[in-house]
Structure formats: structure tokens, C-alpha cells
Image (cartoon, helix red, strand yellow):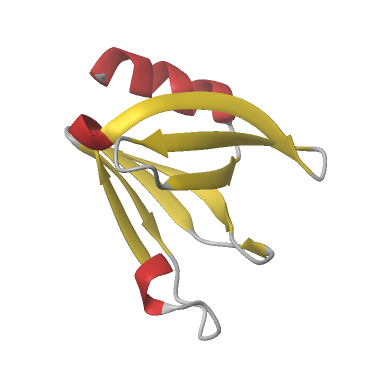
Length: 91
């Protein structure tokens, strides 16, 4: 299974892109030239996720993903409720 959503990474601004849910990971992809390479193709395996919280950024629905290694990613997700519903069934 692979579900696609429009999503933006919140890292030194709002960076457009796409976010995917697969059977075992969350994947974020972006082709922006000004974005550092380590943020262009983020793969977050479910086993590395410590916690996911809802949030808001500039009046947009966001999620914050806390990892076991202390890293944190914040994404603006369009259709956040559907994203979280699918994720809840896989975690």
C-alpha cells in the first residue's frame, strides 16, 4: 500500500512536497534546490517513531513527529485527518 498526500516540511520556512504512507514508513520527498540534501528525501520507519502530535503552523494543520533518536520533523499535511486515520491503522 502507498497513500500520497500533499505535504510541506517546516524547516527554515515551509517547503512544499509530497508525503507518502507505505506499509512500514512515512516518506517525504521534495525537489527544492535550496533545501539541504538530508531534507529532500526523508524516510521515517514506523519503528523509529516515538510519538506523533497534532499542531498548527500559520493556520495550517500540521503534525509533529518525534523520533526515538531525539530528532523531530514538522509537516503541514493537507487532509490531515485522513492521513492520521491511515497511520493509526498501521502503527
